Image 1 (cartoon, rainbow, N blue to C red):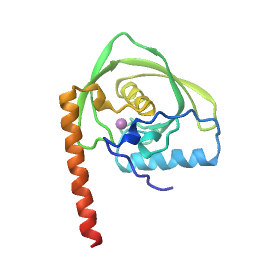
Image 2 (cartoon, rainbow, N blue to C red; image 1 turned 90 degrees about the vertical axis):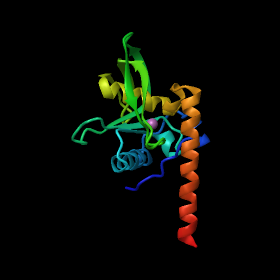
Image 3 (cartoon, rainbow, N blue to C red; image 1 turned 60 degrees about the vertical axis):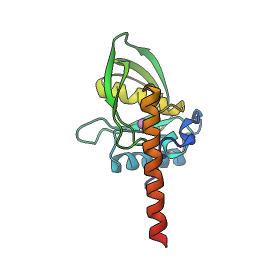
Length: 176
Ligand code: NI
């Protein structure tokens, strides 16, 4: 397995729309395993393929305390959302260090395929419901900061770009 590079907001590649997966082979299993390893190492509770610059509909999630309940969702669809909403403090591995409240349906029912291509359904609430919706947004090219006000979003963008420049300078110094 190997760790994958996570794209950082505002990288334009985060806004690409992911394509459905049609081939359930060893390549797909390796991609899912590498994404899981990358998520655990980060550490994070979810990762979408879009975040590692693979624009295919694949998500890995583990919202358990014990970090041993890996869920893989391929070509996920939302079947139902509750009328009740909840505001959850969200973060994202592509926007490190930024957390803010996002309002979404509190409960959802989703359908997806597993690594063998077999369909399954899941009902979720709490953090899992938030996470599935957040990761599915990534597949549509949407990052959670897009739910925030333009003012907040621009501040976040500026902060990320400043950090990016700082990291580049450090790399340049290291290779010199
Ligand atoms: Ni995210």
